[in-house]
Image (cartoon, rainbow, N blue to C red):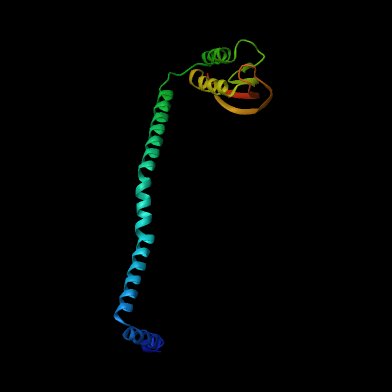
Length: 180
């Protein structure tokens, strides 16, 4: 088949539309052209300009968020480098640092936290430990004693702390200490 037969059905439609166009008054033609131009402008606005303007208006907020993320990552990088540059710590020194951090954060009473050290592993048993104190102790244990958690089994306490009126954590943490 030739291409002329493919376009054949379109020709009568075009001829019919051209016939209607010729019969219209100039005012009707102007109204249809104006409506067509307005529809074309609305289509361009919806498909091209509105999304671009929306992206442009959101750019400053996205830029601020990305700057904050970059700053946080640089802070973490600095902290990681500082941790890497710390001098090596012996097992005895790590054990002493860990024991003093438990006493410092949770108090001398074995009722809230008890530390058992066996070689390169230390187990901290907690009773109603406050989340902020636990987080601060974990940071201190990582930095001062180079201890890294290997097992954590915690659950919310049934009791409420008298000092904060909030439940704490019960359970145990197993930490690995630096090797000899």
